[in-house]
Image 1 (cartoon, rainbow, N blue to C red):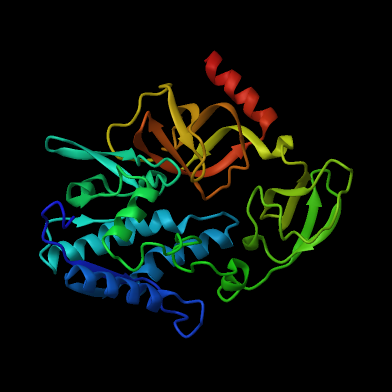
Image 2: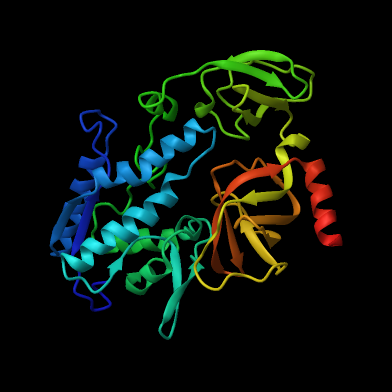
Length: 354
């Protein structure tokens, strides 16, 4: 941004402070790195604390979703409510900024006075458009993504050549507000364990779980049920039965109960005009998944039915299906449920016949 001639100031936001005294809290390290970069570039660095708003608008929602047996995505909510609402508003209204520039690997196509269209980042391994699909489209009028046309290797090389001390800092991973720590131990501080049975798809009880909020569909590790039951392979979570408080597991990576061609969603958020029913699109049900051919049907309750050309593995309620036309991100919707493969096939055939 400096090389492009912009007047640049930095803004460091803190979104979590419940456990600042713990050694795994990286906020102080992050701030120190930002301060050193700002010093090297001779730019001001401001600070703002959004911890209370993050807790109210992101974390509380995630806890509610976990209690309901779903798998939330806090990174998507953080972009929507914090980075491109609270953060953007503070920069514009209190610091007098004309726009914000972030390090997301995504691109924007600007079309006259209409909201810019969100595009995938050039570096497909780092593309973050999936996490940005829920941002209000109007926010992109005041947003710049200077890394969207670059690869991560190129960014690191430029940072090294510029003498920035964080050029070789490890990539950030983990959930946005807790970083790289044990999620089960962390969430246990907010939701108490509620043990229940682990059952097979035929109803056999083969173990006990700590609480449904500790698990997600498709999970293999951490089930604590040992080896094979029938010789078909490792166990995977196929379903969380909230009514019976049971964790349903199946054997084999591609068990039919883990596969679906039909997803039902909540109301979608579109970044531009909604796609026509039946239009040939692609979708992702998780970050870094390869684009999957699909089409959509608009349901009477305001949600979507997403019909995939091939079975999708382990879609999780509470996660998001994000839709694309080519490189353009159209928007997305929260997954309510998936139909197992046999039921999916009937639904696809029935929809196509209709």
